[in-house]
Image (tube, rainbow, N blue to C red):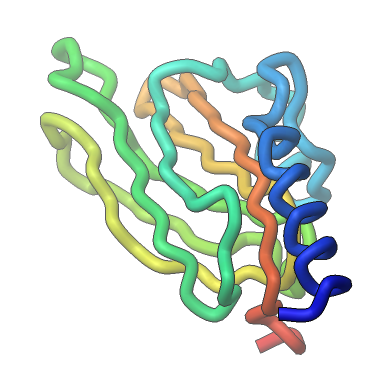
Length: 147
């Protein structure tokens, strides 16, 4: 390995501790997310999202979404939405639950167009919202156009 490449790799590794979960008091500004929320403010609790902090390939980034249950009688998770900050299509996925479920556990892969924040929002049947935002550093972008 050449000296320059080794210094670049060491510099990149030094940045890893600065990658963090988005501050709990603010979600990234995504037009589609703002339009969908329509002024509603989600709580940044309960919804757990596992995404790699660094993704080597943006074409298939593994994602796990969980909302622990069991839920009290009455409100349950109606849908879970995933939004991305810089993808050509920011509304990445919608998972709808027509029937009440004991707990939500979703495993999927998403495509990401470069380094960005991914926001996940769970909507309850009573209108309650729970959200989570995570920054993912993508080394090879997976979305090149609007498809």
